[in-house]
Length: 224
Image (cartoon, rainbow, N blue to C red; front, side):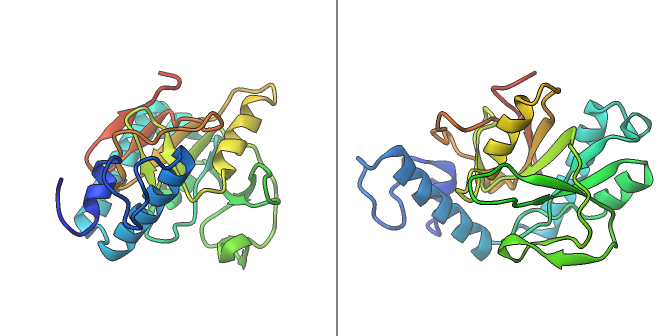
């Protein structure tokens, strides 16, 4: 237990849900309650500027080290995201990577229950409103990413995540694993408060290769 303001939900998935769901609820029902609690906590208790700075520094160091440094990242395609609902900002990292020759991409919802599409993006280019009001590049040039940065609502030490419930990233990673090419490296980006002892992953859930937070890097149950 940590505080009485709901943060216990983020640290202890056995804690009662804020909507009073019974302990015998199904896995899906428990995950819905956890998602709701985590999102409410995130919006009510915004992480500090220091936490944002620590996350960006750790993400930059971890990602660039794993990819062999900035020179080795040239001409790679990296999927980033446009932060919404209190998600960690990527700060100046997109500009840094673009200047190093990395091709960035943003997600586009192609349709309900379909994998995401990725369209090439350069910071500062014209944008248009996409699904759920999230900005996307005004001109769509579809690319295939080799690295994905994936925002997490919640996550566990194995790299399984809880998102917004649409399953888009899981379907996308499954599709990219089945197209005959190497599956992209998937890196979760999360606040420390999103940590869960167990996300109770569903059979369709795909783990991140690692999850980066302001204070730690969590290995996953996937590739080393």
